[in-house]
Image: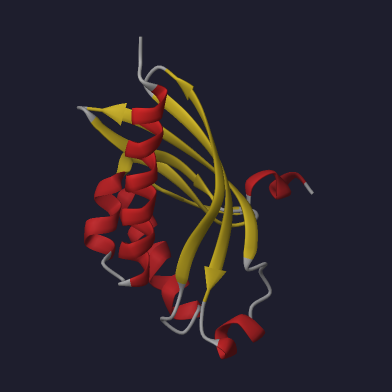
Length: 136
């Protein structure tokens, strides 16, 4: 029997660490929290696949937001099934005023993340900050 509360805490710690690494632009460290074959939704219709593409995407995203992006998580729901967890999250992107004024993308999102436990570590397999709005 798995301890769901422990899993939730472990995943929350990973997400908080990743948000901090994004804000600090430590992308070499960040990609170690992704599976080798992970997918990052950059924007609707555009994905990055694998750690190298994800790293490149985060560098471009940081530049787009004037190197001031700071993800902040709101409410999160965790759906646990063995070594896989789906996280439904209210995610806010903070950035300096110029970057947010010029952005065509919402700064408040309903994100979906999929984590898998690999070698005793929780790694992000799918990072979709747009959530189900992709089907709009």
